[in-house]
Length: 457
View 1: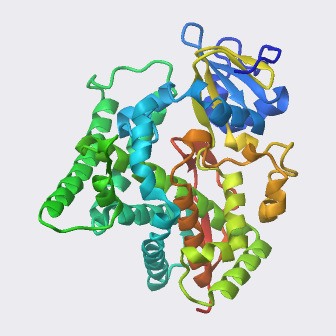
View 2: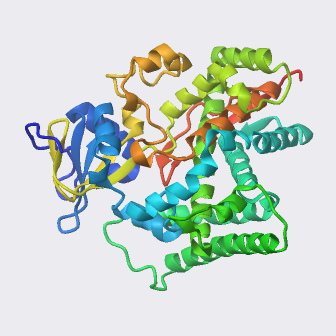
View 3: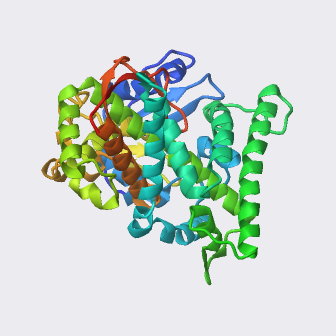
């Protein structure tokens, strides 16, 4: 616990009765940027009428983010209403579990996400990328929405790695159900008052139907896989490995726990990676010189062959492109916690029980760490430049003991996908501006269309 002198947090100016409610509803990311610009690195933001007004302490410095996520992580828990809504919709998997539940799950799952194990997924990723680019070519496609196409690609890739051959059915259910469930979680998570989920309102009934479809699909695949195991049929997909995961200390996952892990992997495993790939392509289309350098590296290193995990170190510029895209468009633009005990962050008092956010969207644009922060420049991520910045100036995967377990998988998929797409295509921007808004992950509020420019293979 810090012992520095405490000062009260400055309060973002809002309307007299409802505070910053409309600002947060209409443009929360812009509101957080304004809060830092006008008031500094720790700001209290209030929203809602008296009696149900919510207060959140927003922390914007790299040092503050490190304190919340790592240095005092035990004091900043996933106890806020937003995580509770995710927990009720997607289960108590790695994303939302806490304390002994989380530690047990992490120990069981960790061996499935070692670098060696994850590197073995490169072929499955490459298969899905090749399928996507071949579809474009066979259909004579000239313009694509790179965010939509990246979402399709990332979902199929994670479904193949999770389920093996059960891809098409799982993808159809996820594509149909996830958007509605996500909107339901978002609406309830940011509402000061909610009716119980059990009440038969139209919204509750629609969400319940979507939940049932997701649960039934996962349960069906899990049951079939268990049956195959009993008859001696085995597999090396992630679901089979989850079913085999066990230890004397932690036991195994039961059917409900398996479903919860699968749902979290589907959610976190495709939306975050899709954001990285899609915005990297969008930014390359807007910056022809950067795209030219990326094409040159891909052509020189791969010489037309399919990339694998061993090629990641040989594609440093493509990796820098992705990191810079993740700086400007972090898939988790805001990360919430709740303080257990009173503490201070940057000399500002945080009371016990306070809702606290750290915001990659803001910290990734902080002028203390990034010159001309809105400019797209992959060379911000040379080894020398990275070493000169604070550790949490860039944290798209979170940090501390709750850092994303799948970050190596996400980088592997993103680099392999971007390299393979660039082998076959160039891109010219049609939509130069893509409005975004935070949901469970960062969501585009409009298309990111690009013209495809075929390249010699």
